[in-house]
Image (cartoon, rainbow, N blue to C red):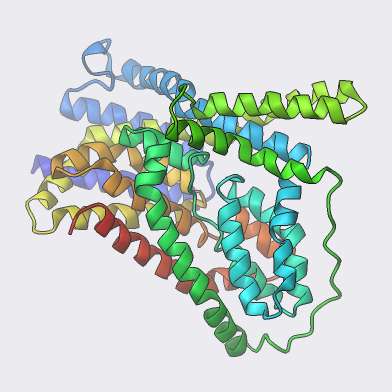
Length: 454
């Protein structure tokens, strides 16, 4: 009876939080307040403090003290990494290096005459750029200014072009915040997580979708009568005013991390790599630009963006970790995991269920990070109970959150792309249900195989 109550309370808490987020209440506020309430409730029900043996004896005080613990842990760990990566990305955007990279990367698309092959080419290039330009919304904005005019000039309908751009959504690579979080939760270096576990799953999705895109979107265009639609007059794709070698600058942190992971002459973490890269780029900027004072002032861009990352991303991690602690203390998830573990194929069932839960949560919240940060901390304990590696569940969960986000009507990238293209946002989502649904099936299937669960 007690176990049934805990399961009901756990499910009720998740449903209530989802409904509040759907009503567009700030998810940071929802996670934080809900987390505190659940922690206090769980403490009284189970007689356990959120701080464990270090508790003060007052469950309410300990619930708030857990926020302090989460703040210290996350800001010093994954939060610092995410803020630094975001700051470097903002610096690259400020000096136009990211725009130059996007412009030159899509240049080969002009040589392709088949407009539907251009769509596939754009998707592949976009997913490669996602390794270094980690923000889905940020990359979408860059591609809108580079590839979008090319596609329209070739006769691709804005709805089809916008839909394809929203497929460029999977968070992957050692520079990505969600990947960093998933790796830390799995207890392994981010490069190892990427190369040994994440890469093969994402690569399979990219290959299959790249093959599917020309056929699927041609069929959609014919079905919707979009092929012969009259297009507005299109603008030319403009280059940006910076040297061509600036395309290398966004790649420097990724290169440093990967090179020193393969040849570990000295330890090289993501934060160190980003600050080394900032100094290298700043020196080049000082040599090239006549106004040295402006160059020195550009460092403000880095730290201002780091502050924004704390406000928009790290704060979600902190508040979501409070919520996750409350859910963990209630024990409903653990009870369900124990029940599943006695079933045949328990590991596969858990992988599928957790991935679908975070996929659905990302659709509701419009944020893959919020969904992953809320449910990710529960995975290590579940994996331990099932006797499998944490990565077996974390990889499909992380990829699933990114796919779910691109089917959300409140996701920043989907809103930005649909608004720029002047097309119905819900039509974009409807069209993309097929390719993103296929991507989710591939995600689960490949993860089951590579995770050694069959």
